[in-house]
Structure formats: structure tokens, C-alpha cells
Length: 344
Image (cartoon, rainbow, N blue to C red):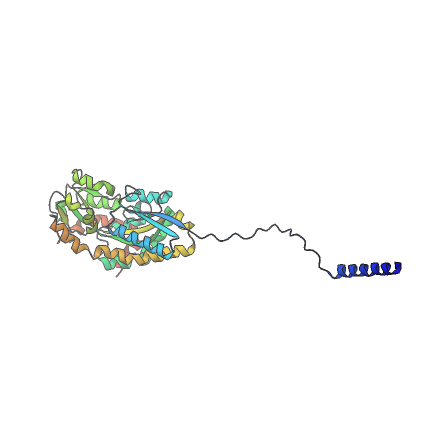
């Protein structure tokens, strides 16, 4: 019996040794300190887009179209809310300053104030620089237009596309204007733009820079006699209520701009930046057509409401009177100015 137990003990010892040699070692706890990669966060954003004009003006309608397309293209990741009627700034200059400071995200409005931030934009406001809409489209949608947009980031602004305000015309409450001599002595509201101020001085008027939100009241109270803007602005602002005469002088073509704060632009992923640029250019044709296609209808309605419209204005004497201003900026901007003139 004693031998039996001794043999059993020996067998158990051998089994234990075999198990120990052939078994797996218990896994040691990991000593790695590298954290697991964080999940990629989806970009989401909300933007405030300011326009100086009413909801039915071409700026605001273009802006809303852009906002809708961006929302659809990002499945709602990016939301753009449009604020018309200068809600985000009393004037265009103030709104652009808001973009610089980060208090406003986007802007759709005239380039008239842009010369205060990027001086080269002033050349676009030279009287009788553009011949017609075909000339406009070739210049602004081509290399010259892109070169101007490329200058904007140095002012903490980012241009997405050139839109349109249109050819500017003169309204006033004093008399029918046909020749430059008729302008002498009029107090004419201008944008905060040095080229416009110089042009109206050259015509013998008294230019009065004023933010757009103040213009209707100033006309109503006779603080100023007149103002100048494209037909779409005159119509949507109901200036026929405070102005008797409209002269189709078409003395300056006024581009518009869709822009975004450079700070907000840099925060966006490249794919969304590309979508913004693509969409802005897609909306350009729609936005421009709003004014061009409706001008005749709007003029007819202004006439029906009692406004006297001088449709045929001989521009030759106007060009002669404004030649000193034209020549000054032609010399200042040299080659690029010549390229605009020579664009066919």
C-alpha cells in the first residue's frame, strides 16, 4: 500500500512538470502609454450673412440662394442665416469691418467700400470703365477679377465671387437731369468711396458720403437732393416716394461681392472651402440675372407710380466731364486698368 501511494505521488509530480513546461505563460499587463486615436469630429458651423438691402433685392435673394444650396450640400452641417436691411452693420464699410473683427461672418453687397480695405478695388468704380454686361462678365469672371479676390486675405477678408449691383443711375427731387451741367449744385449722396466723391465733384455736385440705411430719411427730409444707384436698388428701396426724377446715366458699373471672414475661412476643412467657392460661382449667374432681367419691368412700375424717367441720356458729354477722374485712375493702376479696357 505504501508503495502504491509513493508511485501515485511520483506520477502526479511528472504530470505537473509536463504541464508546466508545455503550457502558455499568463499574458503580462501592457505597459504602453500611447492613447487610442480620438475619433474625427465632423465639422459643423453656423454663419451670419449680412446684406445692406431689402429681402427682395438682388443681394439678399442671391445670399439666400447660396445659403439654401450650402445647407443642402452639407446635409445641414453648415447653416447660413441671412440678415437683410443692414441688421449686421449700418453701412457696407461697417459690415466689412465686422468681418475683419470676427463679429460678422459673411457679406453680400457692393464693392464700393472695398477700396478702403484693398485699394485696387477702387479702379472698378471709375466712371465709364465698363462698356456693357458682356464686358463686365469677361473681366470679373476672368484673371483680373480673380487677382482682385486674391488680394483680399491681406485685409482679413476672403472673396468667394463677384456678384452684381448693376449700372448706376441718378435720381433727384429738383429737376430732370440730361447733361452734366444739370447736375451742378445738387447735393448727391455717395458711398464711402473716394472715386465716387471725386467724380461728383468733377460734375459740379456736392457729394455727401452716407451709409445706405440713412439715405431714404435724408431724401425725405431734403437733407440731400439725390442719390445714384442701379434700378433694382431704386425700385426695392421705393425711392420713387421721395425722388421725382430718374436719369439713366449708367455712369458707373457697380460690382457686388460675396465674402467671408478670413478667420472663419481658415477654420473650414478644404472640402467645405471648395464647396463654398463652387456654390458661390454657381449662384453668380442667377444673382446677376435678377437685376438684368427685371430692369425693364421695374422701370415701368416706377413710371406708373409717378416717377419721371429720362431713359435716353447722351453719355458723351458725361464722359468728357469725367475724363480727368478717368485719366487719374488709368495712370494709377496702369497695366491692370489697360487690361480691363482691352478685354473683348
